[in-house]
Image (cartoon, rainbow, N blue to C red):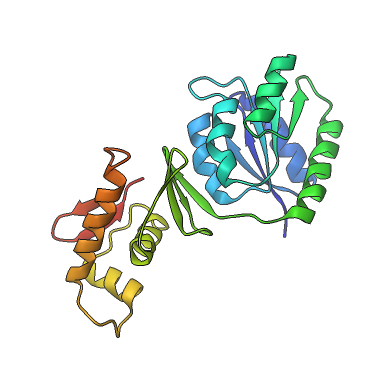
Length: 224
């Protein structure tokens, strides 16, 4: 299987250059042009991230800080210049290396390959989804808000897992019940509404955003 690289940079020419180079060298490439888009693309489970530091709105340091507790792959910062303090701060938030622009594309390729070889020996990736400050860690079966755990019962997490893996898709109560409790579950679909009420109450302790939306007369959908 080809290894996946996520390239995050607001300069489209840089992204195009890197994408072409790594695809020629038999990598699968995912691209993002800002921090918010990067958080979404991380859900695709890259094996390595090339992350520009100097992006508007959400810079590379902030992106790294948000994802590092939930993503184990190497993160290499791309930067036009780097001071000693920048390096220290970057390593503190979880960066693994610095690539200074302008760089030799072949040296970058060699560094990427070296990090991926090292990672193969330590490989233990988790599958995660990022919805703003809410993180769903499917491997741990745990929900976090700004890195604070939100404690859920097993069935509550399973409902979130079902809905969030199909963002925007509407599930009626009967289908949720069949998926989570099974066709031979002891009870009926009314239990779904109570579980969703509890999920919302637990998330509401951390944020006002409603991630599980009711579609009246139809069912529920994940809107994160």
